[in-house]
Length: 221
Image (tube, rainbow, N blue to C red; front, top):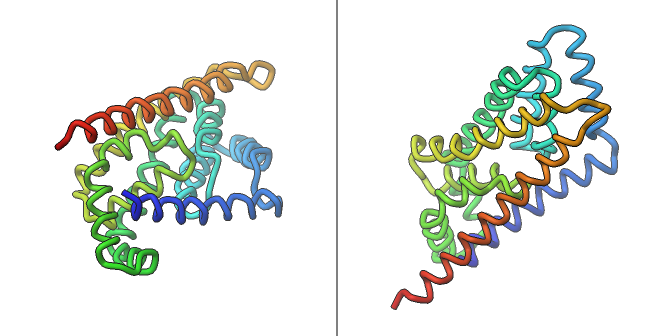
């Protein structure tokens, strides 16, 4: 398990560094995203949806406030169209991360873990926990994209991956866009409560799964 955690921590550090660079240079922030969406809304809802999908796809390469963008999609487009735009972005990001890692993941693994035994242990650990990791990955920023990359690098079947990805993304998107659709500038409470609730629920699920895994492991001879 340690080699897998090492890879995850390295990738989280990398994505966090891009987030910090963006934040402190002022290249991109939530206010700018709102301004872009307002400008796109003046042109056409299609441009708003395209921008939402593009921002969520870009999260694969640059850390984005995914939950905030998803909630804003509901605010600007409504529940239905906001959900469609957000899902297009998330599915595109997941599939692209999977495909790139399927093709180049071995080179990345070789770079991050020098020993072959560590690489094999990391792959075996992910394969053992892959389904739950993907399902619960949205508890943390950047973890979904990392899981998509690990799925590709470990040669997880695409249909299995995309099913897990959708099971993770669809409820997340539906709840977040609905909260955005019933929120307003004067009353952002539904969006705030939803953001807190989603994070808390996913963290509780992680805790329960960890306890179950440790108990099962302790009982295994």
